[in-house]
Length: 150
Image (cartoon, rainbow, N blue to C red; front, side):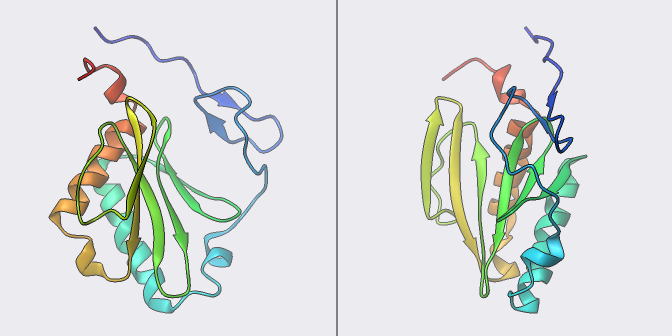
């Protein structure tokens, strides 16, 4: 049974939208260019490939924040932190995954597991990693909440 999802809450200060009312956030205007200011130019190309992979999943919003770039459908399903020599980030998945793609996993609830990654080359954006991006996108749509719990 699919339940109607409530409207997103919108911050009156910055206009950002969230699934949770009064969610903590930085309330500022930030740019992707500023976040990549100290990064190797190859990291920006790697980021563009990551963006392309999220685009293949469907519509999403890219939100530059103070220290990271978030990706949102209804909820934020991925984030990337530009570093000088890599892209650090995470994907939110409905189930814990064991994969060499991830450096670690933090579970926040039975259906929200943050999988930490570190990308240094486009070769890491292989079929397995892109499959995880697609799974995270479904979490961003909150489709994982309609499934029966395991």
